[in-house]
Image 1 (cartoon, rainbow, N blue to C red):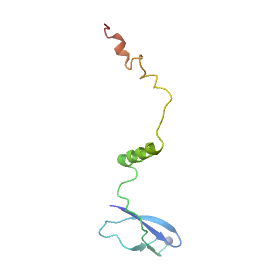
Image 2: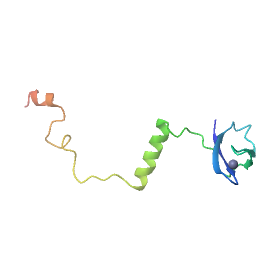
Image 3: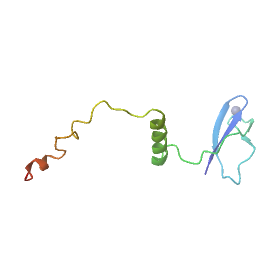
Image 4: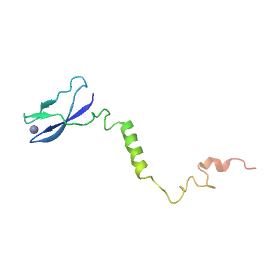
Amino acid sequence: MPTYEFRCSSCGPFDAVFTMRDVPDATACRCGAAAPRGVTAPLLGRGGSTAMGLLDATKATADRPAVVSAPSPRTGRGAPSDPRHARLPHP
Ligand SMILES: [Zn+2]
């Protein structure tokens, strides 16, 4: 179910989960006051999921690409990536 943001005039914004069909225009805050729903897009994904983490990482690298100054020493040219490769016959 999506998460919606509500704004209490004294406590500030808070999130509540409703179905898209049953989301009210206002709900009761923990202080008892009526809090109107904020104008935001419903948060459909769960924040801690693997898919959300991947999306966040993709957005971060789009703005700030991870640039390296040298190839990794383990995968560089000439260095065997697997020590068993050194025992293979060479031409
Ligand atoms: Zn409140």
